[in-house]
Every structure is written in C-alpha cells, then in structure tokens.
Image 1: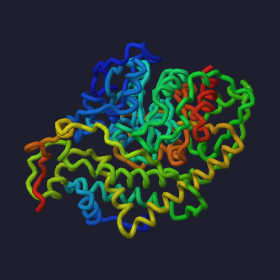
Image 2: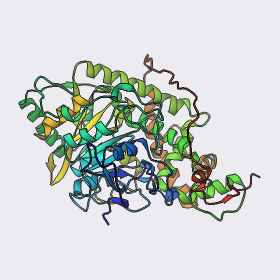
Image 3: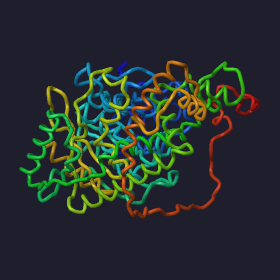
Image 4: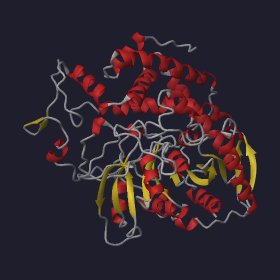
Length: 422
Length: 92
C-alpha cells in the first residue's frame, strides 16, 4: 500500500457527471459514510462516520470514484505529515524528503499518480505547502466558498477544504464541483453558487497586475527566490505587469495565526473525551480523571502542545495579551491585503520559503516548523483565496509559486496560475 | 526571554485545565518549548489597533424537522453503551 493513504478503499460515485472518469483521494479529516476517518490520530483510529461530508456527497454526485483516505498531520497540525499516528508519508519526488503538510498524503497521491485528483484542507497552508513540496497544484478557496460540513474541525474560522491536482485546470474543475452554498454550513456564501472555474485556466495574463509583497521574499531560501523571479519574469514576458508592495502586518502573521489556531483547537478538541468515540480505556477514577487519561493516550505531542498553548492563551490573565492582540493583528492583515489588492489584481510570493525538509529534520523544534508557514498563514487570516502552482525545481526539488486573490477572486488566481504552467 | 516565564507548575496547571495527563518527560519538554514559543508570541504586543467593521450577518433558516442520525448510528462509535445510551465514567 502506498504510504500516501491511511485507508485504501474504492467508493463508486454516480454513473455520469463531470468527474465520471476520475479517481479522487480524500484527506482523512473529511467524513466518509461507512469508511473510517481518523484525522491521522490514535483518538479516531476506529471512528467510522455515519454520514458523508457535503464535499464527498458532491464528489459522488459528480461521478467521481473515491480511492481512499489520505495521510495527514494529526488533526491537521503540522507542516510535514510526520505528526500522523500512522507514520510518515514520503515525497514521491524524493523519498528522503517530507511531502509537506498537513495534507501530505493528498499531495503525494496526486504526485505519484495514485489518484487523478485529491481533496485537502487548508487551515494555515495545509493544501498549498504539500502542493509546493510535491510539485502539484493546490487551491485554498476563499473562506465560505466550500462547505465545511463533515470536516473534522481544528480551527473553524481559518479552514477551508480545497482541491489538489497535477494541473491548474484539473484543480479548477474539482473546485467547481465542491464550491457553493450549503444549508448545513451557515458560513458558506452565495458567491460560489453558479461559478465556473475550469474555463478561467486560459493562460491569458495580458495586462494583469501582480503585486509582490517584499516581506514574503525576505528570508526565503535563495534557491527558492531564484525560481520565483524566473516565474515572474515569465509572466511579464506574457504581458503581466509586476510591482513591489509592502504588507507590514505579515511580520506578525505567524504569531497571530498560531494564537488563534491553537485557541480554537483547544475548544474544538475538547469533544474528544472517549465517550462518544475514542479509544477504550481502563482508566480508574472520576469523570475528569478518566478524560485526562484518554486524552493523554489518544493525542500525539503536537496536538497536546497546541491544545495546551491554546488553553493558556485563552486563560484568565492572558486572554488580552495573546488572543485579543492576535485578533487585532488579523484585522490589520485584512486591511493591508485590501490596500495591496486595490492596486493589483493578484499578489505573488514563493508558497514556501524553503525547499522540502528531510524526513525527521524538524520534529524536535516546533517553533522552527511554525516559522516555515510564514507565507501561507496570512492568507487564511485574511479569508482570501490562494493557489500554489509549480514553478520549476531547485536542486531537483519542487518550488511552488503562490498567487493570492481578492475574496471570491478564484478565477483571477486560476487564470494567472495557468500562465505559469504554460 | 518571555515576559511570561513558564515553569513546570504552570504547564501542569494548564494540562489540568485542558484535561490532558502528562508524564514528567512531557512536562520537562513542554516547559522549554512553551517558553520559546510564548516568547515569540510577545511580538504581538506592538500590533496596532485598526478600525475594522467585520461584515457579519445573521444567517437564519426555517426551523423545520428533518431526518437526523438514528440512535443506533449515533452510538455506533462509542466504546461503551448501555440500553441505548452512551456510558461514561462516574461523575464524582
């Protein structure tokens, strides 16, 4: 079995539909009726959802054949897919490297050809990072474009389900199937109702203006920056215009992201108490003692770390210092992005400031791992759409270019990204 | 160093609030890592307040009866059940 999957199982869709001849791999935090959905955690190792997520219903309705549930960092908490309780996934481009995360299994499945397309989820870069590291395309949709019904929650205010594919057109086609309002997720919006995306992948960037936030280039690996500039030069040669922009707020994005994501996680993951689902335990003691024992057993290190830090950030005496300031930073970021996008159609940066890590390289130093998310987390905090598209290789390893658009501007970033491919 | 130093007792206290048992190794490791991470978070202190008006709207729908999970489906993942109910640990 490919190490991209936690569960390999063929689930047929409708006989006809736009995805009738396609296979799709689904990240293991997206509920599939009758097929276990683990979130990469010991806590849900035997959990079998009694219902389908809305996106899974839509995939089946579009005729797609699901081929399995993909490996991921536990509950989506990681940048390498190494925090999975089911072991790591290797990068199909170079097996000594991580595939990125947290949707590493989905990106690896597409890169290796184990599936034509895949679904991931992106809370702070979890679709774009593995897309960049595995040399495929990934889209993080605008907050509210895709239903989260049936997605096991980690940080509700930040996350979206989105597509991964070998090409921009393929990702756009999958987005078209899953986008649109859902009365079971009140945060979905009308904008995606009748939108088409695949036809936007026409490679026409004549007159497109691209802002380049200087803060997202500084500090990136030179080899990554070189590929990034090559890709920009190529877009200019096709008629796009580029100019530098400054987004001072992104210097506080990683801090704000982790405070908000950890805080939301500490609340969301309170439900895992071993009563409705979870490992059986022979722990003795009262209600609270038994919960604490189940959670010690069921959660891995990174999940414990984030729940504890989130609990700390929300606790009396620290709420104003951490959580309230992080919300201020989020508002500041939105304002900066609004200004930058009033003078540019899209913004461009390297998706990841680094090349794919060696397996095991970043496990001991969580803060170093968080810093690798510098270019992806600002987009989630600002609720915007972004795409990662392959921009060549450096030292044989894939480099991703990130294009960020205005809210519900998926067509703009798809069009620009399709020009990078050509 | 962080303005909010973290010690072993603080980590144990937060773990208690979050209902997660930790062994001594974890307490040692988290104490060092939390000091590191919280000190990094201190950079939020100089974030300016900006005027923002979030575009929040109430999302309403008719309160109609619709099918939900059956009792059997709702219980299918529980480690222990009794007479059609979840079975939990004793409250006191």
